[in-house]
Length: 217
Ligand code: G3P
Image 1 (cartoon, rainbow, N blue to C red):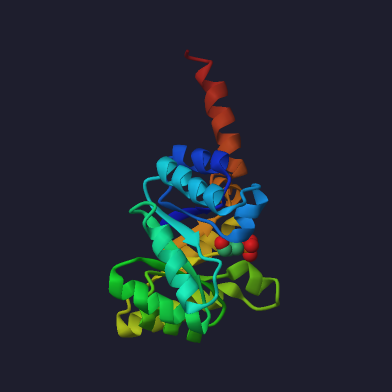
Image 2: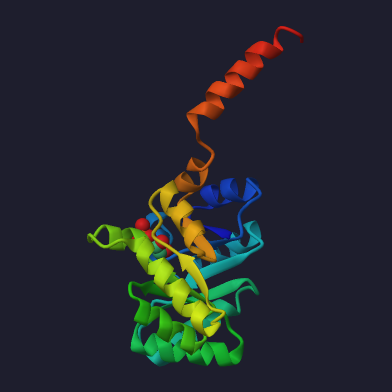
């Protein structure tokens, strides 16, 4: 399973990359706004900086919602770097644009996926990735991990090679459940990735080993 970090924070991206297990980065307009990046040139420059840090797929989201606008913006983003994946919302115009990008060899991430039908349409259009939002489903009394399992089943039934990129990850157990269910990728805040390191028995065990090591050092 690939690990992406879900942030536009360059320090966090560097820290995750330094861990040696990072495969890519996802961003969205809210994450860009959170780090105070605004204005078209600044946003494009921020993507360039992320591409310089991480040698992996970097999702850059369009903010247009009309077909022509999505195409123009997506082509501009894709031209920034070979690792850019154009992130397109799950709307009618978005599906048409994903088909266009797919035919042109431009890779896409269809975002804001909340149902199996949306994931099926995105795969048929040729999306490279689909992003089901687990945490936001959980927030609405619906088990987000169920969606991952259903999309996995549908894609395997027909051999779609669209990758399931589980997004809106809130905690380590989301990551574990995604791995059990066969998600191709998780994109997570740094906190949940680092959370995978933790177990109190590891800390207790290491303290004991180090204490005992003093006896023969
Ligand atoms: O990048 C999309 C997704 O991961 C957003 O997560 O926490 O805003 O629901 P969240």
